[in-house]
Image (cartoon, rainbow, N blue to C red; front, side, top):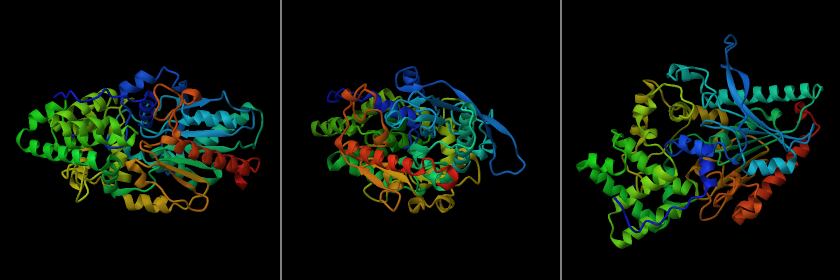
Length: 491
C-alpha cells in the first residue's frame, strides 16, 4: 500500500487499459505509460494514426509575438457525409496523442455521419514549441492558450474543408468531445467560444480547480467499501511505521528504491490503489487484500505484490513518474508528459490530493506542504497554483455555459471536481454501478476483455452506461439540428 498465495490472477480488460493509455497517469491523473502506448499503437484500437500538421500561434495573447510551432492533428473521414455532415472535434489532453481511438466517439461518428478531427495539446507528444522544457519555456502552457489553439484550428480546418469543396462562408455543424482534463477543455471551449460549436460532451470533466482536494481520498474510501477501506487504512499505517524504521528495505519491497523522497513513495503507493477504483476494477485490489487480512497474511507484502503485478505490471506505470528528479528533467521526450502536467497542476488547477484530516486512506504525510515543496523543487521559486483565478475565469461548477453534457462515473474520485448537478442547458448525469469509473461513457467497451466498441455483440456494457449514452445521443441530435444551417454567427 513478498509473495502471497491468495492473490488471484488479475483480469483487466484491454479496452480499459487502452482508455488509460489515451487519457493520459501521474499522481492520480493518468499519464500515458509509454510501453502501453507501444503495445496498442498499431492495433485496431485506433481509427487512424496518420499524422497531419498545423502551424499554430505560440502566444495568442501577445499583439507582437508572431512565433509559431507545428501542432500535430488527425482526421478520420470514413463516416463523413460529404459535404454537410457534422464535424466532431476530439480534444487530446495531458498526454501524447497518437491517433484517434476507436472508442464510443467512433460509434457516434458513424451514427451522425460525422468527420472526426483531433488536435494534440500544445507541448505534449510531438507538439512542443521548444527543444527544452525549462520553467521559462513552459510559460505558454496553459488551458487558456490550449483553448485558443482549438479555436484557431477549428476555423482553419473549416476553411480548408471549404477550399477543398470549392465553397466559401459555409460552416459545418461542430461538436466538441473530451474526457477528464480534456473534458474540462470541452466544457470551457463551449463556454468561451459558443459560436464555434453546437455543443460539448464533457466526460469526467474536472471543471472546478481545487486547492486541497480531500474529496478525492474520501471517494476512494467510499468506492472501496468498509471492509476494503479498513484494510487499506491498516496498510497505510503499517507502511508509515515501517518508513520510520526500515525505509530502504520497504521501498525495495515495492521496486521503488529510486524514490528517495518519502512523499513521492507514499504518493506512488496511494495512486496504486486509486487506479483500481478510478478505472472500474475494484475487485482486482480489494479481493486479494481482504482475503490476505482474513488469512492473517503480511498485508504490506500482499500490497507490494498487487503494486508490482497490477500497477507496474498490468498497468505499465513507471516508478520514475513519481520521482522528483525525473520531474526536473527538462529534456523534450514525446512519451513523457509528467513534468508538463505537473506544471499545469502547480500553476493553474492544483487538485492537491492531500489526506483528509481524519479517516484518511492515504498517508497523512501527503499534505499541502508536500505538494508546494514539489512545485518549488521542480519548477523553482514563485510557482503557485492560482486556483481562484482559474475558477473566476471559467466559473468552476457554476460555469455559465449552455449545451454542455456532463457525465461522471459513480466510483470515480475525480467526479467531485466536476459539475454533478443539472442546470438549464447543461444536463449532468452520474452513471452508477459497482465499477463505473473515469470516462466510462466514452470508453471502447467498458469492463470487457479485448473488445472495441465497433464490435457491439461482444460488448459488455452496463445498463447504466447505455441509458446515459441514449441521453447523450438525444442531446447531440437536438443541438446539431438546432444549429444546422444557421451559420456559426447566428447560433
